[in-house]
Image (cartoon, rainbow, N blue to C red):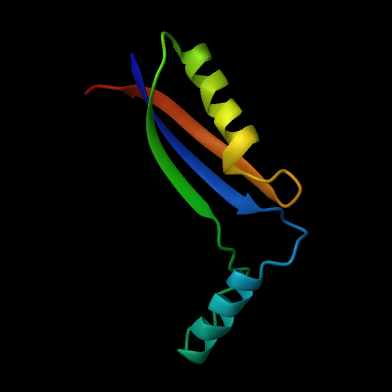
Length: 85
């Protein structure tokens, strides 16, 4: 069975986000003064094969914890749903 996974990884709320700050300043220079609290993160889409949803979640969390995100400076959320090939 295949599962579609959508992962959002963002800098932790209390940490400085230099990319977000740079983009916010650029938006303000373009006349978009209403842009507030701009934060830049990563979005990852993948299809993962697993026998069931629990196994798929274990695989996703292993990928996150060993490769995809840094728990010192980032947090993540993900959704998982069956995917028809």
